[in-house]
Image (cartoon, rainbow, N blue to C red; front, top):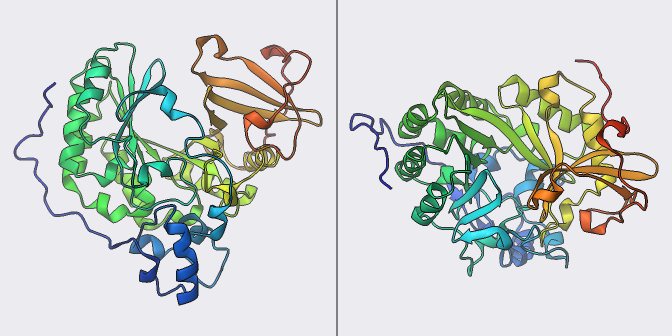
Length: 395
């Protein structure tokens, strides 16, 4: 399907600012030679990449600095735990680089590179040498989407789509915009946190966004800020630029031990995001992905952190749903009391499960749905559901 080309006059005014990207721990003088050698064991298993911009956010005097934990390898990643495809994305892959789990939404894994490799990444398998799940040639995915009129939403992901050249991204977006039933195009990206200057100075990118985010067919930026310190002046300017382009901005992130597993930190993040026009959308229970044990927060503790974070701030700062991207669907965690954990299918791969309420025996050690035991008595109907949510609090 042909793309909708940019006008010939809409050319790149100036090249994007290029941060220096580092792929070896030996390039980090902040680490001792001994630390470099020790942590290289981790990078042989799971890739390392970071920009010098992002490194500058780290307080190197603090060994537990949250930004450091987010991007610098740690030995706990080598613990035997989890699996690489924790949500069985293979099962919903319909073509190379194309995932279709829910009727109206298709994912295009269109890039295999990110601005940085988060240590807790749930798709770290994509950055391994034998990975073969992404594709820069999305032609097969475009044909699949065009042939399925129920698909109204397309999520560009990977990897990070905003690491691609803007001309290539514009071509993909233009081809999607030529499909009448595709109303929403989402771009999943952590680049506003990892390298906002790259995006700020890329005029071709902004021309593309202004052209294709229209009154009836919006582009959404699914931003990924995990900690308030990522919201630098440059990052906020980046979000502002996207908003001025007509892009709707929201944020999604996982709950991570040592990074944002504190109700004050999480509420600060949610409130700041609401102030800049990028309100919280999803807070994820981290997937049990191989290498991610250092970031593990059990479900019950995670729920109470989330609940307490929502006691602060306006309604716009409290819009997040706390969900688990399970193989069977997106399960919203909605309450915990002295006996049970309550949940519901927010999205489900099996239509028969959509909206179903779930009740499990409370298990304070469990991390994932598969570790929970269903309660013996039936789950409550929606109108009988206990009020275990966040209480109203001060603005």
